[in-house]
Image (cartoon, rainbow, N blue to C red; front, side, top):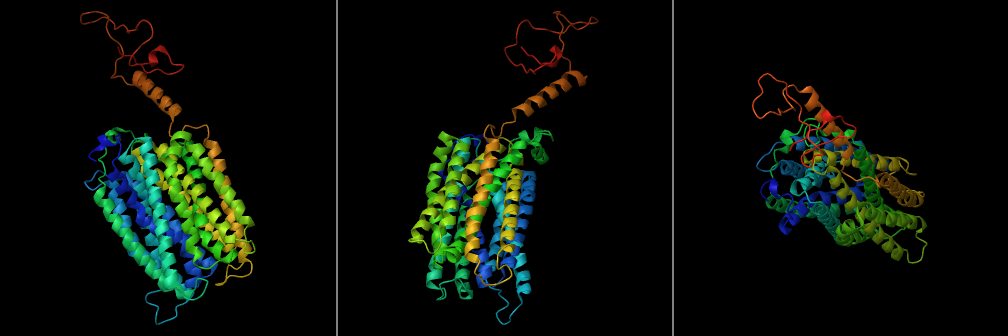
Length: 520
């Protein structure tokens, strides 16, 4: 793609593929982070529930703070040959690659000693912070690249669907790798324990290698278009100016969409975090199911991505989102009635996992398309919008997990107590289901809103600009002489056309005859 003149054309398969794989490293790491971090810290490193939740919260807070800051700086970055979005993407990839291997590994310098839990907490914290900054930089720059590549609404939805499709593939790969290593290298215990540390180490090495390979494909295959000059002509009060990101705080839709995205992410992420623990502690299934059930979720979610684009095209964003929402709420209800005494509990769990995958992926793809609709032509502040959305997502998820961990019946213990089984059932039904209800309420506030259109505000600004043009600028004359020759001393008579103007008229409601500009 060369230049910004091509952004309205259909994207080639090569561009779509190379864009889609650009988030795979993040997806692989996020899958491990959300699905296995608490399990690894609690069962392998032997952190208490509260301390494991605190470390995850630190990471989420760093991510939340980094996302809008990276978004603002990405929007301010000038045109460069490599691309303002791609350069931030590359910074993020480097940070993730250098930090993530240390998170899912026992302390590398502690083999000959027995450090305290507090010392281990300090050891893991900087790696978590660097990883989350890099993850945020990669995520925001990758999302902000969508409006740069195309203006076509269906192409935006297609890119989001392809992006999420590769997210699902990444999660499937993660769970397959975890399943293979847990079966071949893990300890003999049916539960995850300290003896599984080596399996987790090799899982991370494999995933990091695969992710970096696809990052190379992304950076070689995508050529970021240059910005046109419209952002330079935009005023500081216009959202198309990169310096006017604060204007978004005056838009009601911005808050409505942020609440919708936050609640969607709560549904997806909390179910991902606590599903493996629910499977092992509540349903008492073998530890290999911590990979099998998430694998079922994301396989069904991957299949659902193929229906996302036609559903969005024919049913619309809001109806499609509603369908996914209903499925998720139904699954949350089923989680409450499942336990280890239910006959054929594994089969019921497979069915619930399929529903969770279909509903969650439908909601997430659609809400990402809604965010792209909200940004519209305001590309210069697009990264800030994605950063702000991610801010509320990461912060809310971190706080939610920490509260859940603190309220755990055996919060201060490194081993689970008798209340674990019932507690995780409540999390998967009431907490995840409550987030789905919040998403429903958010959607209802948007049901009669045309997302991304601010016609009333545009008209008010146009009328105000006309009045300033006609009344306040002495250098502009809106009168013409009726004489054929030059007028030396006589007054200029305003030109008042007969009848209604046909072309080139900008009119305001309740305006005086002098407050319209008419050209013929």
